Amino acid sequence: MRLTLERRKWIWAYLFLAVPLIFFLSIRIGPTLFAFWMSLHEWDPIALDRPFIGLENYREVFDDEVFWKAFRNTWIYVVVGVPAGLLFSLVVALGLQRLIRFVGFYRVLYFIPYITSLVAVGWVWRWMYTPNGVFNDVLSRLGLPQSGFLGDPGTAIYAIIATTVWQGLGFQIVIFLAGLESIPGDYLDAASVDGASGWQTFRDIVMPLLNPTIVFLVVTGVISNLQVFTQIRSMSSAGTGGPLDSTISVVLYVYQAAFQSLPSEMGYAAAMMVVLFVVILLITVVQLKFLSRGAYD
Amino acid sequence: MTSESLPHAQPDAVMDQKGTTRQAASTVVQKKDWRRPVARFLLYLILLIGGLGMVFPFVWMVASSLKDASDIYSLSLIPPDPTLGNYREVLNETPFARWFFNSLVVALITTASVAFFDSLVGYVLAKFRFPGRTVIFLLMLSTLMVPTEMLVIPWFVMSINLGWTDSYWGIMFPGVISAFGIFLMRQFFMGVPNDLIDAARIDGFSEFRIFWKIALPLVKPALAALCIFTFLGNWNAYIWPLIVVRSEEMRTLPVGIAFFSSEAGSAFHLIMAAAAMATIPVIIVFVIFQRQIIKGIALTGVKG
Image 1 (tube, chains in turn red, purple):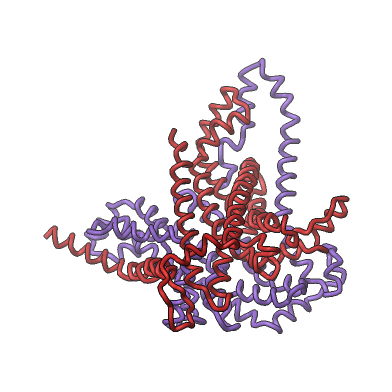
Image 2 (image 1 turned 90 degrees about the horizontal axis):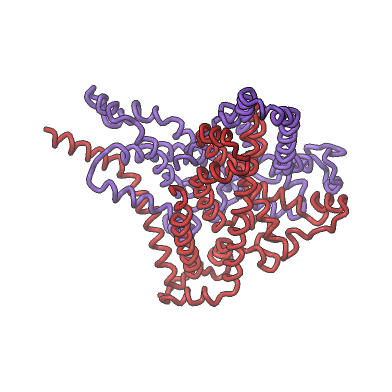
């Protein structure tokens, strides 16, 4: 009797999981394997012949200067954008946490950019960055030299990173505020009674207890910055990662190879995507090992 | 959620206690008395300036959108001759309302689907014991490792072969179930007491009814958070709709804005009007529900 009840529960479980399982196999896992397979072919969707070329695409990826340029740029998006976002959001969160009145109003101000479309705000920033735009106007009023911003290969990528940081700040602030709230008040009271300075309390109590929050934000931030695409397409000149490929990212280059070049180089694009995938995987594993270690010391 | 309820948000109270119990420290405390309101005022002021800086691009967007083409480079915050002409022009030149509708359809249906399937799967994985459970969970979780950007190429080939391009289903299919949501819901369903489920079983509830009537109402906050995330993600999604949509009518709002803006080139008065129409409704909805939305997003960070 007990066995049949158990069996019946099994059947229910499989029944409930049937549609999702089909979904994951056909929409996620199948296409992942298919991407690997495509990367071993010369793949033009309109050509009848899609010859198998082994690892030739990968060999080409490693010889492709634009790919390496895109790879280096993607790296800049990560190593500049992620720490900048974390620093700003932590500072703002520490400030917001001390507010007693108008808390909701303040949070709304900082959070609004996060909910708005990156395409739309990308164009707004592009407008502010134009040579005759509001930023250069402010610079000249302050007697500072004007900047080319998006038009200058030396500054364009940082102009895009600034927009990215601005847009993601609200999310990171909210996560930091939640992390700060989970710190028991007793710890801070005890530190205060013991005469710890504000900085000591922050360094020795707040920071270690925030470790899980920081790990979460670093991992999600790195992953999203490795896949940066939308803001570059909205903000770089003609949306192609210019000027002089100074802002092109791996995902944008992949998009161009697969969907904009003629003939389409989907096999080659898939190979680049596989390379990026492996990099993301390695970085995530290393981060989780390295960063979360301190959390339980 | 509100930080005013936190003990460590008010170090003053601790200071005052110390001051009354220890005579020697009283001068220090008094010295700090006049400094404290000043520091607090400065904190409010600095954060206000920062916050206004955060929303400045939107203010600038609206100001520019109300300017005539001839005034656009005047760079004044207040339009010298405000006009709604840019909005009219965008609405006349593009199927803007249709794009808005498309985004709404895609985001709403995807959110409903994710809410249903993710909570069902999360519940089963949290509360049922059956052969293959761990394998299935790991299988689903492993898909989180593969970025969607990697899959757009095979998805595109698939959509061409199956005739899914240029349809709502074509835009939606990659997102109708989310592994992240399953993981999130599973975490929360694990906190639902087993006794409750067993009691319902003894009362003769069907398995689906237990899930729907007993377990699901207990994880409402998590479900709300998942819905907010999914809606926002799909409303703002760009790369996949850009690839799968061919016709102008089927574009979602971000895709439509992107095409319109690159065609408009340097006609920033029109681009700002389009951007304003895309962002302001979202901002209004957000301001109304800001408490719930921010709470929901904080929740995913804590458990996720």
